[in-house]
Image (cartoon, rainbow, N blue to C red):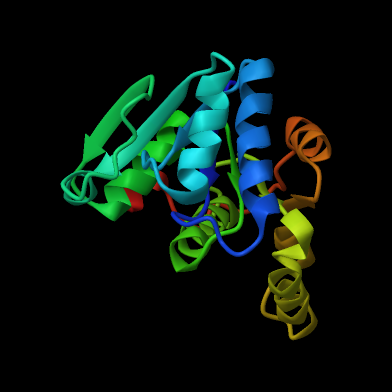
Length: 193
């Protein structure tokens, strides 16, 4: 993987380990020559992962809607800042630029981005690995919910298994590098969206 999109919070959350791991993920990207694609902000975990990449000489590409730039949250030290008009255009551009996705702790926006990428994969629109860095068990409840979805017949096992999970960076990147997308029927064509 040459580029990975990271979805994460625009705040730091309540546990210092979130910031530490976000920074370490960025540093690891730089050491492994993986470029970061992310939301372009200089705040919270978003800023931490970008700062981690940049501190070790790596490349960070931000994708930011114009309306957020006006709030002065754009990271000023990025390799490249791409401005778009909408949140949907932002996700589409981030998907176009990356070879895989990692979600760190975050709120509604992070979950929305993660699930849209999973949905696109389920529909066969891409075959990229989608992963959660489950820092300090942050996503345990969500993972339990996905098992409930399977148990209740609303999610197939094969689709649940598309979501790669680990609590360590190296293990997660290893899983992503060895990922093979399931063979799914093409329900819709990319041109249909």
